[in-house]
Each structure stands twice: as structure tokens, then as C-alpha cells.
Image (cartoon, helix red, strand yellow):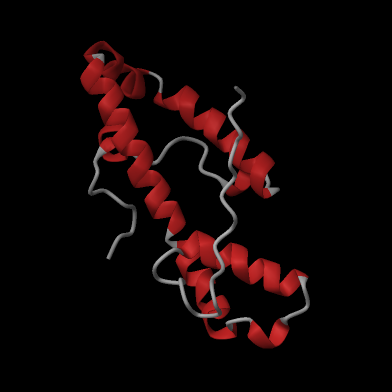
Length: 130
């Protein structure tokens, strides 16, 4: 007997509803309203605020990646030496990827990593944090 796959239908989120509860679903519903030309229903106030929410994404990404690195290093402590020993090489690779992603020229980036491996792995460290 074949098992029928069930696909969940997208959740309908009314304008403004869901912004705080499920940001991703809110963005998908808002995009769908825009595609359908239902501009009067679009939550313009929250769209203007979404840019601010996006700016914090880089911080969330850094925290998540640091957490994942810590878990790997806890599992395999010998790997803990790599960030310290390979920082220069890792930084050059990161700059290359950043120039490809952003279109910025390489001279817009520092020529060497301005932070230590310890700072980069420190869960509380953020450059210029207030």
C-alpha cells in the first residue's frame, strides 16, 4: 500500500499578525500579497522595520557559528588549534568570499585579521560593541 505524501499548506498570516510570532512566515505572506497586487493589505509599517531586523541577522549568524565551532572543538579538542594556527589563511579566504558576495574591492578589507582567534571564538566579543 503506497503512502501518500502530505504537504502542509502555507499558513495564512493577516497583515501585521505574525510579524513578532513568526517573522519568516510573515515575510512569505507579505511577499505573496505584493505579488498578487494586494498592496492595500501589506503591513508597510513593519516592512520599514524589517530592515532593522535584518541588520541584527549578522549578529545571530556569528553567535550560531561560534556555538557550532565550540561544539566541534568540545567533541574533538585537537581541532581547537586550527583557528589559532590557520587564522591568516582563513581570513584571506573570508575576504575573498566577502569580495565575491558584496562586490567590494579587496582593498576595502584589512590586509590581515584585526582580531585574535580567542576574540573571534569568544561568545561575548563583538567589535565596537557598545
